[in-house]
Image 1 (cartoon, rainbow, N blue to C red):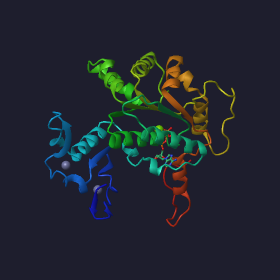
Image 2: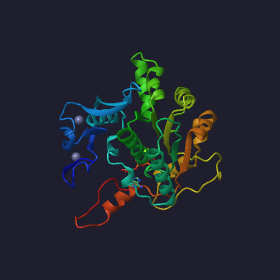
Image 3: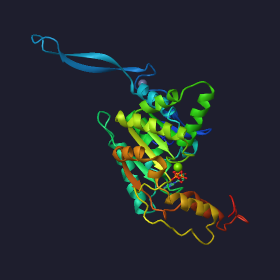
Length: 315
Ligand SMILES: Nc1ncnc2c1ncn2[C@@H]1O[C@H](COP(=O)(O)OP(=O)(O)OP(=O)(O)O)[C@@H](O)[C@H]1O
Ligand SMILES: [Mg+2]
Ligand SMILES: [Zn+2]
Ligand SMILES: [Zn+2]
């Protein structure tokens, strides 16, 4: 932990040595000002490490110094790798420490995501997770918290993609003469990939083939993939008819309720669903899990000291 003075932790980074901020539509990391000038190597970028080895039995073990990259070099590399992940800017704040479960299933989701990230074994096979649930329940938040930890603390390479943006990028690539494989390739090979909004889209043959290829490639290579979706993770529909929400919860909610009833299995097909079962731990947030975006807005529109304190879209 880097401290400004003895016992005093940096107020900007809290001792992490890096800071994450929103830059345009992306989350961006930089080395904290407290750590820009490295006190270990004095800016040279390397330090000495003492090794011991026995070259001849007669002489016995000998100690010698080797030049190794300084911690500041590792830090700079992790920060640069973070800036390749493609995390959304609005999610810059997301971490395990600021995820507050409102229902028990969110507590489970937090534990699954945190255990996954903290116990990640670089040398082994790591099962990912898939979070299913209604809007605004922190699914993307937990994907981002996991990738942040893996990249900045564990030192892995990772990518985040929102599925419909990926389809759009590939389509645009076609127009520029690129093949789908050129875009899918790096996503197939990266150590950890998070696919957000799984099941979204038109379900066109192009989309289904793209998704199938990406997931099959990662599955075959035994690579770790994380997912989030608004569709139900259940293999079968529990009841065929669900009453539409009543009262002030109007058309948007009715649409969401219909979407929640839809099964991911039906959206992505048997081949993908079957692979997900092996690749991931499943965590489903129930439909009564509160939407944090709406809760914030409700706090905002509560009559307060400001006259006519209505903000945001009315309902
Ligand atoms: N349990 C929670 N604790 C703290 N913040 C939360 C929690 N759940 C959601 N949030 C915050 O609420 C906002 C919306 O969360 P997020 O985008 O992760 O939801 P989501 O489940 O991915 O929704 P959608 O299905 O619409 O993509 C974010 O700012 C997120 O940080
Ligand atoms: Mg989301
Ligand atoms: Zn700092
Ligand atoms: Zn250094």
